[in-house]
Length: 350
Length: 248
Image 1: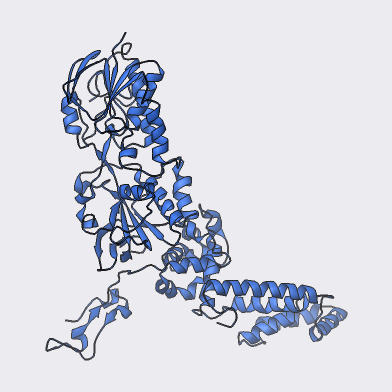
Image 2: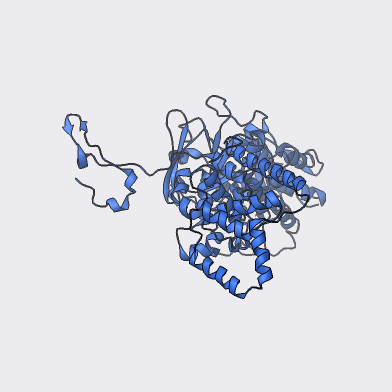
């Protein structure tokens, strides 16, 4: 009987990989460093997900319950892999408590880290309490408390959502599009308008990237049904006039500077590489790409392959990714792991 | 020091104090020339709602500023100041002051509807231009345009009698717009008609001019149309926060 597959990370990608392996009758060991499964959607308290509008705790919760408990999945919470030795087919992973696990292959579903808005101090996060992140707004909605200004709990009259916070910004070394924030922001804007019909929501953007079918359901719907306004301007600065926040920038369509009062400013934060990626890279001996995500050896023929044979990657560990694509990649990684013995080891394309 | 490039600044943004002393220093006259900031300091959400409430303005919030309307526009081709895309933006942001700068050209839309066919979002810019011109009139920013005066005279005759009498439409229109009835083109046309038309037809025309024809049993229709028109006008005025009745 073959050894189990080691899966690192219990978010959508890892849960999907574990389920795919279990469904095929293969054993896996799922290592999660937090005290519960679910990954970012659960740990960060997301509200309704794109594109299904299901609550995260329902949608991801269902993914959790099908692998935990499951006789084919051995879940280890509150731990992480400290050492990873051996050769493909005969890996040995050492966990934090010294436990050794033998594994045939490994799947890294180690995810991402939300961009920390402190790194863009000109946009007021950390200075003004009413400057918040999309994650915080998700929590306001999912907790049932509603969208309120943190400073005094009032209902905001006017909300600005700033896109590309921690994305597409060479100044801070974030040369990627985080892919999901446009759609998530449109979704949040609609949820704010739904809860607070008298609150006007403005989205400040450089480009709108609600790709594919999200165009109609999120971008158009937010404008046509919910009257959300989109302003083409990258905001220069968020300050305060002592009462309200002042959002300053150039409205590029009228070539005029704007300095508009708002009650709440929301940063649509991007997806950074996982802060643990340097450690993961050295423990698992896998290469990171130039942006700091786990590198893929090949784009087309071996979808989930890292630079180390027998070690696969899926989900946002290898770059900004949507939940549904992370799930698909989890399946792809499971498939790669299951067919490992038949597969020829492909050299990493440099 | 005088500001040399005043031509680059809108004249109303140049402020000069005739008598001004700052910390004991006399800076009267050009010494105290200030330039007002050109920053936009607020949005007015009511404006889009007002225009959206008028017939034709319903889809204005769909606009994503692609510029297809302006690119397709017949009038823009001859007057670059005529820019529907820009006005839609100003309305959506509530920049009334900026819109009013163009109040004397907005009504020049010729309703060719090329914008309507070009627009990927079905904003119907032609209808938005109509609603905007209507809004400007209702708010009292622009006088009634000649075409509105013509339409009103035309419609009031139809409502009154169920028919129009061409001569009366023209006479009313020229009177309301302060134009002479003896327009050369009109004189030429009438003379031509008299020369060429059979005598019996001319007599019929003459009688119709003195005793305008009426549609029989029109009073019920008139009452219904009048009620409907009043309802619409009252709704428009209410959307703009104006009295239900009254002139602009």
